Image (cartoon, rainbow, N blue to C red; front, top):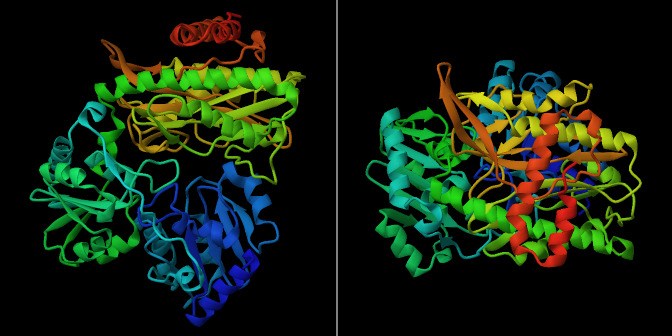
Length: 591
């Protein structure tokens, strides 16, 4: 079926069930950002492949609510599908709920599948529409009725990580969660998010592209710890190791029945990270406490073993990036390069590094105006060939058994304009300001976001995405609970957190610039005014200087840039051959 035919089929199914509006979120039963093929419902229905958005369908309108990262992409992918882009004013907000409240009459019915909607989204919709006399039903899977040949859930084997890599045993992590439950005076805790389960039980898998997680749920109480998983994914050694850590094993499909049969006083669930269907299965006799998963905060703070591993991983990833950029420069004149081919080549360089498992997200290789699409993903139809002119943005990362990387660099392919140089320099200035920030303990992410944006704001420039996100340890490349963005999120930056700093600037139809490093938050020192923290830059890859308009930088910025590039050379040069060393020496020369 075409997307128009699919939309028509959805509307027919809605009519049969007297549904006036149907909501399709971008999610799965684990509230994942990146989805197994079975749960790519928005892509199947509308053709939009971005990782964030919500479809709302009525009989006379079908819209995709998404944020500024995807505006250009959505307009292109939704063309001729019957769906229209509805730009979000606030990233992640359920603004469609208010739209439905204005559009629908009293007595109308709104429905969604509670297995792929978070509890917080479901509550927002219900809280908005119930007072207006609009019925909300979270038990309707319209797509399941019409999606023929829907992909099955993956069956790939899972595996356990040894404590020498994780730095903490499964038993001690379970004990830490139990301590949090005791502190919160709750009896049990149900965990839906895949990276939380993976961290807690030191388990990894390949069920979701680019994210080394396995489809599973977990339950922890004072008396028991249970993993719900397709048991065929575990070998006998893994079963014995988990059981030795006090973990019971049950089938993946048993999770909802388990929740329905709970006989405890209270349970903790995370409303943003638990689907409505889990909440709906909890007996009325059990008191529900809504709070962040304890594991989400625990795993955000990397231990010293993880930090040591990630530092070595950054060297390996930096070697791959250096070899890639040298190869690109050496072969550009052949005229045989494209956005897709260079992404494949970069993966090949990473595959040569020890411990490589996968890329951490689909590489963004945005040439010319494609660089202005923050989450651009090249297709055979959109694939640009590279020429010796303009800017190339490459945002990429790797999943290694010893860490996760995420890096963005912009390079000149030739014939650069003054506007491009100024934009590049101001973005670089923002990266430097954020990276060298010293801040009081307890600082929130929105404060780092403002510090990083200051050089761009001063010239009336800005960007629509956040400045930074947490990064997992051989886990999801986007990891909470902390973020560096404009939202007033009350999560302090704590010692041991790894976060990206990635300001950007995008001129639609022209070019895009983003310069991204990962940083580790560390204690800087104390004074009579309290404790202070700073960032240690982890990413090891040269920052191009031929695009820098030096007059726009203060001496402190120049010193940071020269010092950083010298450090990159010192870290990588011993592992490069002579030709590569000479090339990198030239790229890292002081300005």
